[in-house]
Image (cartoon, rainbow, N blue to C red):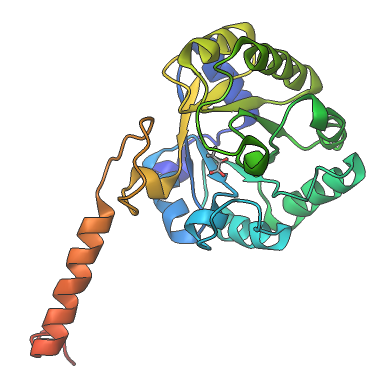
Length: 271
Ligand code: KIV
């Protein structure tokens, strides 16, 4: 048994303890077995099966088209690989906004059909009844405030949210309401670092930032962005740890050359 399979599993309580101890939480997205296996073994705390699968896996422009069935498929693939990390699954657009009964039914499907550990919903006060129903069903909920991509057509752009005091005040209030409703953590996406610092200080549950600066209790990045799989996406908040687009393109071009020249396979690579 390898070290990571013996390691203690991360739970929602672990994340709360990490906040109390001032220990930062690492979170990354994954959508399939192979990458989830690597991230879990590397020691990531939280794996998010994000509805960003709609963009990076399916090639859609927004996160709106992905379905509950497709999210369940991605979560099933991820969960098979995970020994230690906490797995959070996004409830996709349309699976929770209409009413709390639909929301809890969607969350139950995710938990039952995937074996994931929790769900994430975007929004504040307007989705509070849905969050309360899901929490009452015994399902851990992560909130998501700030730039909530499922509302992109309302926002119009992917620019920083809550720069003005009115929107910042709403966000502070929403964060408190989500905590009160029983959320175990909240993603803060693309908001000023000062506001994220205030919210992180005022809440007892952890905040996980993406484009929300250093004061958050943890950070999340989309795996394709941080691994440099698409070099054209370079927002200010992104730290790119690899340049896989260049490396993969080079490797595949070399393979093509080797096949065309007859250099591959060699005698050692043949039976
Ligand atoms: O879907 C996703 O990848 C997300 C992260 C950006 C937090 O919600």
